[in-house]
Image 1 (cartoon, rainbow, N blue to C red):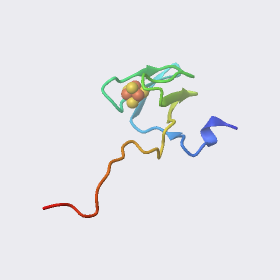
Image 2 (tube, rainbow, N blue to C red; image 1 turned 120 degrees about the vertical axis):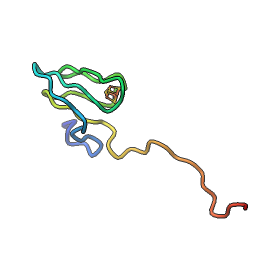
Image 3 (cartoon, rainbow, N blue to C red; image 1 turned 180 degrees about the horizontal axis):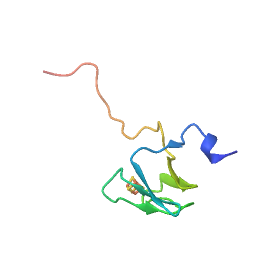
Length: 72
Ligand code: SF4
């Protein structure tokens, strides 16, 4: 199966094309420069053919308990 066809893979926002197949990810302060075929420090963003894709689209990033009835 083609990686880009998976439902959790989407073209990433906040990317900056640098040329020579390199892309800068501007999602967090690390500002990774990622070569074609490479992944960022977080391993969740991948450069495919000079375009950045996220590998975790729609994944839950936090979960917490929230009781229906709360004491006052
Ligand atoms: S690839 Fe990951 S670690 Fe690197 S800047 Fe983007 S979000 Fe941050």
